[in-house]
Image (tube, rainbow, N blue to C red; front, side, top):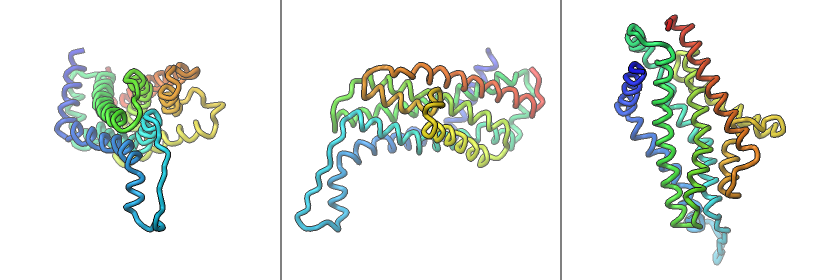
Length: 260
């Protein structure tokens, strides 16, 4: 346990030293608040764009607060996923390239402690960044649109956060297989995209898929209740996350030849 805490602290300090604690929340906040601001000022934006007939009146139905937050979750699912993977792609490869990995593993540290410390640290950084962005978006949504209950906001955030839990496990696993940062990012993004695509194309056979988490979070916002398949999706996501983390530990031990 002591080794895990030491490694966890090292990862958190590395996140601060690399600026990840700064740029990731800021970028996510910009992505988040752009959704309510763009929806609210869209008529003015189109009017300023010009090329409209004289006397033309732009009337765009104003979305509800819930619909604005759903649009924000969609942004997190595309741009956000890419940002999350890019933020994680160097966590193992950088230490391999600099030789820091060999230095760390010369000490009495197990592969599980090493991978678990990285998993928990990266999960903390990503989830805190996501929560800060989503709560700020909810605040602006309540000001500009309909009021959305904070309980619904937190429930939808909790469900969608499971996608981050899954994403971190997948990216760490890929990081044990590849040494190139670009390759890690590419393979991780492609795999996550395939999961989302198959979930859309084969809904009958992919009811359990983590790709359904955004839909379940959206359903909570619209219906105000836990969806019928939300439990299945949540449990399968947690199970797959544990599986990929276990595979990451196994492959790390195999490739780096570090025993317990």
